[in-house]
Length: 283
Image (cartoon, rainbow, N blue to C red; front, side):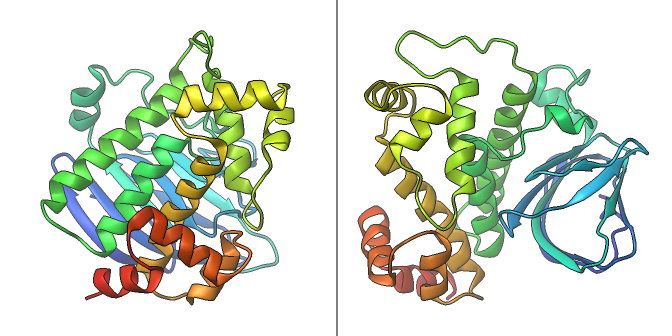
């Protein structure tokens, strides 16, 4: 599997699966333009920082803003543009063989795209959860780890492909359309230091608050509050496993009012405190 040619790329964890390779990589680059290449189809998912102004050119095309997800068909080239500053990012890098893609989708034609305008700026709820599960498993593998990673990778790719290539955006009766739900989820993801109110989310897609609450619960099976809490807990798990940030820093980074509020929400969701979760997973 190709690791690309981006300078200062430290592979923190790597796993070879059937027809795929999954890596957690810490990239660092400076003012000089840096280039990433892979001989295989590649999907990059940025874990941290969550929001990052990063531009690049794919296969010599126009300079575009790169989102949380970057997709590159086999043999393509991504040239980063980072003028006047130094940047670093931690990503999940997935290299996929042609056989893997064909087995998953039935056909490879039009499966991958290097058109940034078609790639979501932020991952959907389901693909985000799959990538975060992969990050935790790469850091602290558990029982049947390869099978777990393989399943999470398939789920992440399927969700991305449905969002990029799906043509039916019509809303089922009583639910948000896929496009509406994607906009709401993106808004939740981008509000790192505070939780968006239901009224703000409803206004984003032009609905009344009461109608939005009903459609959101029908679409996700959760209230807005429960969904936001679950999203925060999933992101907190990855940060806790990373082990470089204090509990206080994680609490404020995820928008909790204080560390105790973070601990209460985490214990309610996971059955243990953040410190207990970190201690067990790092043993």
